[in-house]
Length: 335
Image 1 (spheres, rainbow, N blue to C red):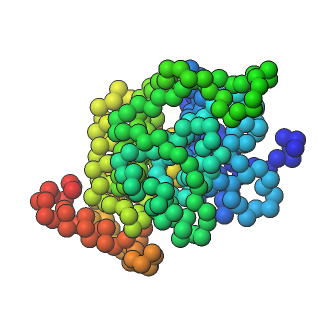
Image 2 (image 1 turned 60 degrees about the horizontal axis):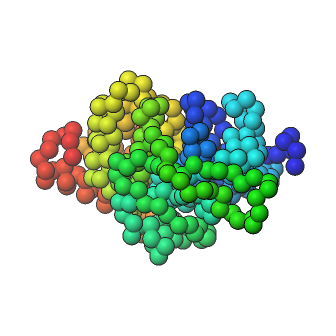
Image 3 (image 1 turned 135 degrees about the horizontal axis):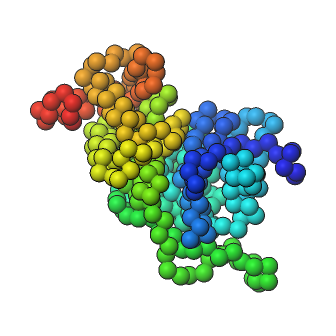
C-alpha cells in the first residue's frame, strides 16, 4: 500500500522534542481518545500512554486501523515527514492510564513483545475476572483484550530494558527481540490517582514538565465518573497533583495532557479550574442540567456556562462527597 493510498484512523502532532500526541479521530464509539508516544533514545523504545479504541471505525475510507502500524509506516509532518518508529526499529513499552475500553482496545498489538504497565493500587479491579465489567467491554458487547500486566507503584519511576532489533542474519524467528540487560531510566514517574476509576494512573515527566492524567478530567467534554468511581478519591488525587506541580521547578511551565480533548495546556490552570468546578458542584453553585439512568443508577449532569468544564456522574457519588464534606467540617473549599 503506497503512502498516498493510506487512510489512517490516527493522526499525530509533536508536543515536545521527544513526545507526540496521537489522536484516534474516527472511532465508532465517538470517543476520539488521545494517545501519547514518548521516544526514549537511551532505551531505543517508544513509551506509549494508552492505546485507544483499536481502530474500530464506521468510516469505510479508513484502511489503516492498527495503532502500531500507524506508528511504523505513516509519515508525520512534525517528524520531518517520517513515521515515529519507521520500520519498527524501536521497541515499545505501554502504560495504561486506566482500564476503560477506549484506552485498552489497541493493547493486544503490543502485548506479545512489550511490557504493559498498570497501577498496582487496585489489582483486583482489573483482574481477568473483573476486566470485562470494569473496562465496560461487557456493557458494549465487545471482546475484552487479553494482556499480561506489569503493576507499578505510586512514585515509582518507569524503567524499561533497552530494545535491540534482531538483525537479518538472526535465526529462529522468535518474537522476543530483546536482550536481557539492566533497565534504562525513562525519567517518567507513575502516580496513583484513583477517582475516575480505582486503577487510574497519572505520569509525571519532570524533565519536560509534562503531566499525563488519563480521564481524571479534561476540558470541553463531560468529566465522566462510572459507577465504580469516587469523587472523594478524585479530590485527594487532584490535590496531590496540584501540590506536585507547585513543588516542581517546572511550576510555571508544566503542561497537562489528558485522555480526551486537552493536551499541552497549562497544568496548574487546568488542574485548579477542574477542582474549582467540582467544588462548585458539591456546593450547589452549579445546578443540575440533566438526569438520566445508566448501568442501574441515576446520573446527574452539570456544566459551566461556556462548557469548559462539565460533569456526568452517578448522583450517589455526589451525595457521598457532599456528606463527606459536611461530616469532616472541612469548610466549603476542602473535602
